[in-house]
Image: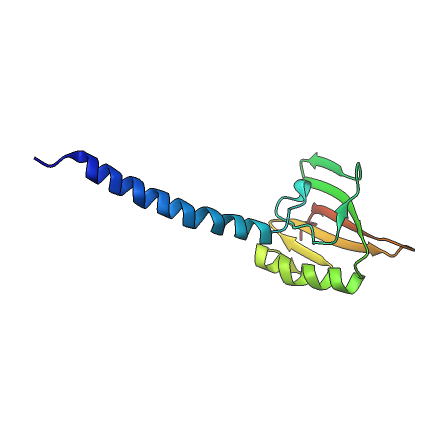
Length: 132
């Protein structure tokens, strides 16, 4: 008569081995991911930018949501612009005629830059698209 114990031990061994392999891989992948700007859903916060505390405004209207939030950093406007031009289309955002304006699901995301003496400020503004 076959004992169920060897089969259970094999299953446990396979599970333990897979766990030891997969957990470090998932942690490695998580370290590469950038945090998302909470009020904007899946818009990433570029490494080198920091959200400005208490700068967030969110309005939920029948026409859609309006969100404004600011971030600061020492990165140049060109560097930030290039990052979002590369990253946002991969997340389903379409570039508009302006390089710093994107659209998706009846919403428009505009990114504006304000140079400062030591830190540059970036404004993220989400609004409903105008009906055509």
